[in-house]
Image 1 (spheres, rainbow, N blue to C red):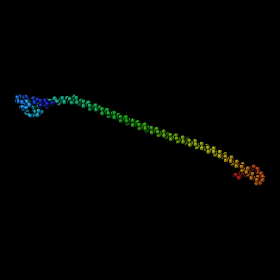
Image 2 (image 1 turned 30 degrees about the vertical axis):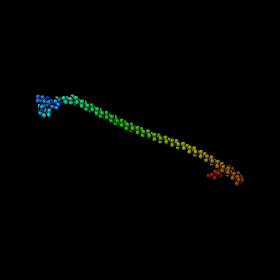
Image 3 (image 1 turned 90 degrees about the vertical axis):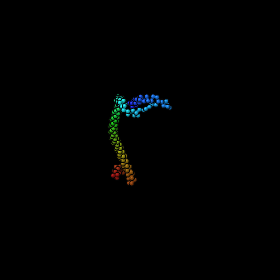
Image 4 (image 1 turned 135 degrees about the horizontal axis):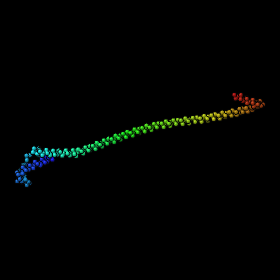
Length: 202
C-alpha cells in the first residue's frame, strides 16, 4: 500500500518537472505528447525522498494489522482452540467412563459366570448323590425281594422234597410188602416193613 502511494507521489513529481519541456512535442505516428524525461531512474521504494511517507504508511499498516490480529483473528483462533480442547477433554472423559463401565460389566459377567459354575457343580454333586442313594435303595429292595423269593422257593423245594420222600417211603413199603409176599408167600406187618425201609434209607 505504502509502495503504491510512494510510486504515485514520485510519478506526480516527475510529471510536474517535465510538463513544460514536453508540452509542445507530439509523436509523429501516434499523435501522443512525448515526455521529455523519465526522472532520475531510481526505484520508488528506494527513493530517499519518500522514506518518511513509506515509514508512515508502514506504521499505519502495522497498527491496522496488529489491531486486526489482536481484536479479530487471535480471539477467533483462541475460541476455536478452546472449543477443540473442551471437545477433546469431553471425549476423553466419555472414553474413560465407557472403559470403566465396560470393566465393571466384564467383572460382573465373570462373577455371574463363577456363581453359575459353582451352582452347577453343587447341582451335579447333589444329583450324583441322589442317584447313588436311589441306586442303593433300589439294589437293597431288589436284594430283599430276591432273598424273599429264594426263601420261599427253598421252602417250597423242602416241602416238595418232604412230600416226595414221604411218597417214596410209602411206595417202598408197598413194593417191599408185595415182594415179600411173592417171595415167602406170607404177609408182614406194616410196622416191620416201615422200619426196614427206614433202616435201608439211612
